[in-house]
Length: 304
Image 1 (cartoon, one colour):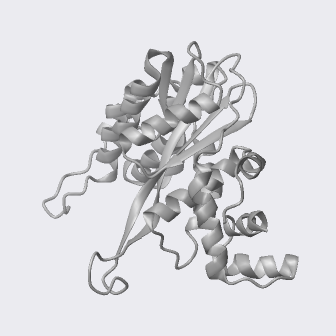
Image 2: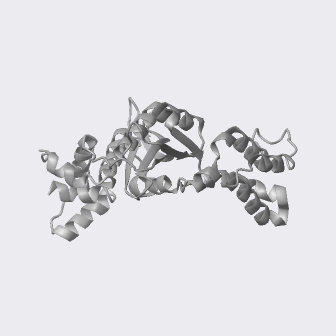
Image 3: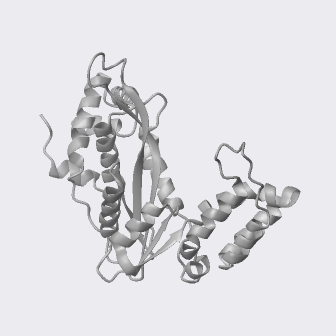
């Protein structure tokens, strides 16, 4: 019975899960009780053993990305409901898979940058990482992610800035640079990047720098912003090399993981979470995504 309750509770809001449970099994249970059992099992699910994938024959492809989740912190004193703090925290999700197939392993954490790096390494190991495995890492180019890539994977890793993330910066600059021909200009700059002609893209952006104004509120205008972003990360934009090697240049799979592992459950309308609860619930959803659902229920006795 607990398994059936948790099966619904990790996928749907607790109110909806209770209704679905009653519909399928004919037993009424309160959302509060369903919530209790779901979170109880979620808290111990992180210790579930993950079956590692075989070592890749060529390379391990891995990515790390973050998204914001809604957190509530009760007041330490007084009326804890009225004085609660609502905020957003970044949850980091990692994915790792072998180049030769689509089977993947996932990880997630609300931890610090170092904690996220350790989770990234563990996810890669679950994905088949071995001492001699070449690593192809993708992310948005945030300095802390580049640092963790170097810390966790060392010289065997090549880091690539997500092509679509770079494209977003170019798209924002296109109208200023080319006006009505912005679509053609945008396509041309993307092609230059794909051919590793990064310096030509930088020169094109520099030729259209906006005039800085005292009334800009400290915001960098889009052309200058695109130039700055690409210039600081140009050493991690070997798209031509990645394409020749048959490696991906976009981090779409990890963004998809955010949607189906994290956001589909925790970012429902009106939902705010205690940090311990959201971490536990996401970990149980990671267990399911990693194919460990049956393993959890066979290796953990039912809670009393």
